[in-house]
Length: 413
Image (cartoon, rainbow, N blue to C red; front, top):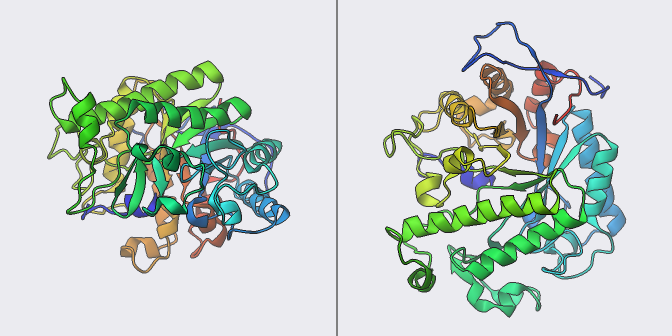
């Protein structure tokens, strides 16, 4: 998630929950203008589990140690006056709950399919709610493994039971989105968690069709020949497959548990204006519509999702993808649709010497929040990721909290 969205050119103590202030004028509010009270504001933190990105700190910890680490993240969210944790619960077609569809996640015990001796998702929901936090369950629909060796998957893994369902690409293994049986299965697997737990949202990240790898092609030709009749080409067929996944999942979530929201956090550029006049004035090397076959703008306009959280993981002033250009673009895309707009923030870049100079300034992230406050459709921010929130390498998160999060607010109305 962080690595993909990072590629552009080449591609006070916790208190009572109160109302938040935000802009209400359209389309933007000049700095210092009067602001009316908004009912709520999302302040989210992603906690990744793929390859033990954030949690657990390493595989094979005892159940008690895993639970203690998880609760520490929830407590950190409260301390930072955040109000939502976006927990990755299906990292590699495996599960952080006792799923009848897929094996236990490898990140827990180090052995995919091995029972960790507790229910991480159930615990996360209970403990988050007891702290006044929302728990958004973060799923990845199609990634099977960060390798291509099927023998390393649990013996009963669906990608081994149905070898025709998965394709290798770029050194990784993915379910084939072009197969109707795959789309149906991944929905069943994710909706099992919706049915079992009082999660607040189903959350997807930016991986649909895989990010392009130079010199390689995604070998879905057989599926295209079988199901692609009537489409202008393979690209249109692929986009239709992703559309079906989004639309069908949205409908089924409401059938299973009507109060659960459906949110997606895509790569921050739909299309560049040089490709499409409706696109943003950016020069990103990846465009979700063309490269990931994900029509993120279309999903908003069709009202299929409840919120969008584009990963605007770039600094203010970056030529290829300027945060100050992309925020207003997304602001106008959601206007009048009823889809909420949250902004994904690259906290992990703050203090990284490999990043542009702007990220060495502890105030860069706070400036993002200031800028976004001038756009009336922005309803909050999410920070990537938990480990970076805790470490707060150069104090950028502390600066955001001091400048903008002086009291706790409700995450939703």
